[in-house]
Length: 224
Ligand code: CTP
Ligand code: CA
Image (cartoon, rainbow, N blue to C red):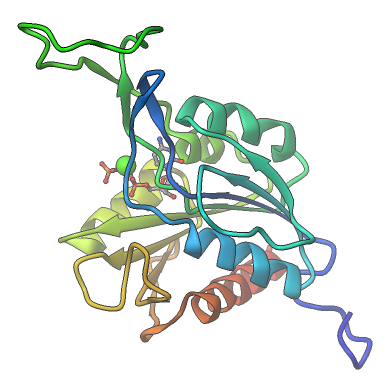
């Protein structure tokens, strides 16, 4: 409730957020990862709490302090992140996938540190599971929100992901634009919705971007 004792937009709602990168181990000292810092996901967790939600944050390895009131589950790999989401899913109202989940992992994990040797210049990879897609396919009442970091054809790819992941919203950005994407404190996103509409947000801090996304989510929940 706010100061005027009115309910907050997400009062009583449960929010499940994935954030950060994943690490796919090659051997005990090496892994594959990406440039995600987790800032957008952590900003969403913080703003969702401010808007009254109960937040579970499933986080890959990042250098950020999670919001005090969030329930945090730390994971490393895509497989661990996949396993971590399901216990919360049935009871969740809003799922937000901000994690930059590795699309591939090494086919074999070497239990001992790999040594240089002739003919060792290939690491065989295999696909990881698409967490958001599987959540989307199994949705009963949840609002599913995905992110899409693209370098080109943003609208086409974002709308494709909306369909493929059975999502209600895809928040897309062009990571090659200054002020958007990895590691920055600002973002410039477009929210693509299932009904075909799109909302272009200006350059905002990640906190403000998060608030706009969540306010939109709250109004979509009210409509159902
Ligand atoms: N995602 C996920 N699990 C994966 C891959 C992606 O949950 N294994 C989620 C991301 O958290 C994001 C959305 O799906 O919310 C889109 O991720 P993205 O990497 O942009 O899309 P992909 O479907 O992996 O397609 P591509 O990387 O080929 O563009
Ligand atoms: Ca991907």
